[in-house]
Length: 403
Image (cartoon, rainbow, N blue to C red; front, side):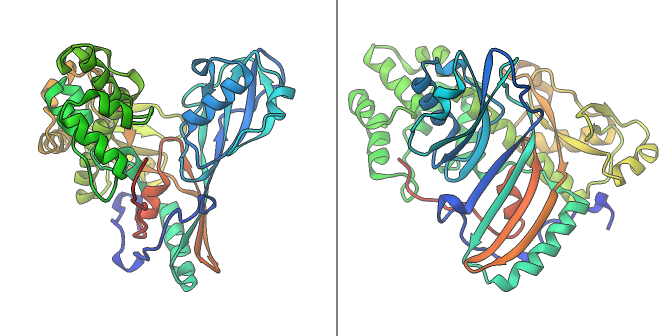
């Protein structure tokens, strides 16, 4: 089958199963773009963390080594409910101090100096080793063969479930932020989701919805910074609208990115319905270096598409988004409008915008039988999600009460 005819998931391959029954069932190993050189003002740490998110891990290491958390560099965020290995960088820290730390859930594997701070995007991808429980080991061969197909044809580059949050409303909250709609934002933050959130968080959201700011602040943990921001503003006599300009930047950006992700996924779905052949006017990406260009001659570029040298892209909408032309523009604009985004008003968005590959390469993929189920190993490029690949086999994230 040509890569231009990427299929949707085969229902005969939907094996289901249980994901992340234990942290060690979901292992991630970051593949960096470069190795530290051994000298310089920054200390690169190769860190293994268990059941912690990347931000919490960096904060704990920074405090232990006397560094400001904002000075810690990292190439990407890693899953919380997992065992993950990644690199971070710190200034003014010594290898001896780093290697002697004793922090719960954190193990420093190595410490090497380098000349620059580690920054977002300084990675090639991630290797995954994932055990799916509750699946007959007999399914391993079937899954293995399907993984070989994905290596040949590419994986639809959907965003993973974690981008949309346990509540599933990150994109809706992001849309309210993009519109600067304080009323919609407060309503969403004050709506509990029973069966997903813990009794404490349900009570906190109920207090938030009732504008009981003191009670909400008492109940919301520190990581609920948007909710706490509004509650603090109310205690100071400010309105929700007055609190909007000073929202916690990182959280607001993440949620607006989730809105972009939802729009990209809508365009991807529209393209999958047509097949993944190049269209006239497509913004194509060279997988070797990430460079993008507008396809003017489909016949000329199709051999490169079939060789998986280039792939069509979809939009992460923003003010400086490179737009497709001709046929590709019509398909993309129709999908954006259907998803509630006006493609003629992108220049007013509070986001820069970018193109994202509609398909990505799966590398080094295999599946094997395990006494507890089926184990999958594979590598994905930076910015792609293991949960997207697992969804091809009907494996979904566990959803349970949070906080």
